[in-house]
Length: 334
Image 1 (tube, rainbow, N blue to C red):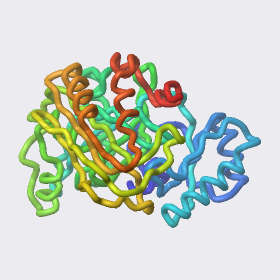
Image 2 (tube, rainbow, N blue to C red; image 1 turned 180 degrees about the vertical axis):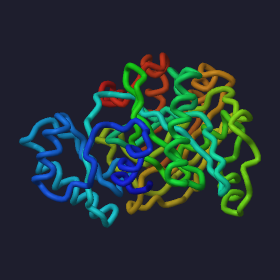
Image 3 (cartoon, rainbow, N blue to C red; image 1 turned 90 degrees about the vertical axis):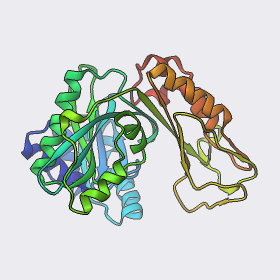
């Protein structure tokens, strides 16, 4: 399931809704041209082994297809050592909603609600929240059961995330599966009270899940902001360097996952994320207010960060209303 092209094929076989696209990996220019014509433009070229927004290109016409394909292949080869590609129909500005699951070694699988990861830059998540602002109990049940159906079909064991695209009519389509714990797992832990890392260890130790689907209840709201060493005013250019002054926010319902300390030198070799700022509130309004305060208190001196940029997102009317989608940053970044 970690291979996105294989995962698509298996989910089609399992009967899980999938974004229209290529049924097999694309191995030649001729196959790429034929698939794009059959699917209909715009299409999205994606690396089978991809992740973190790498090896992805949106193609709106035949003239730019092959150059985009070759660029994506080169990027995927450098990032993952694998330039196998596949293709999907590009859905304009859907929501990106993922379902967290836990599966033990005895066939027990549960879903722990959803996370809305629609606020993205270059297909890389920037801010996530749980639950999704437009989710209904009926839609959550449908998406959760589809996630479990897919996981059972492949005999999955472990914590994992089934990612869906959700269109404006609440139709959802399987996009990919993350066969691991994810960056944004703390917001699910806040709203369910379940420690996902502890559950992973228990599953790996051969223990059965100690709870059933009926035991899982979503309470309150949680938001996570990914704090990156980058300069939003210069096209998010990475900002490595030495930390000179650090103040980390705290308080009830505030969690910061980070290895930063005053004097630490951020190297240029890795992903730019340096901290995860997570808040929990009894409702969405309280969570937003806590995030405003926490971002206002967070100080990382000596480098550029996206803290102020995250503050602007939190205060954006589109975000406050919960009406955003994956086109949010493209519409609002100046």
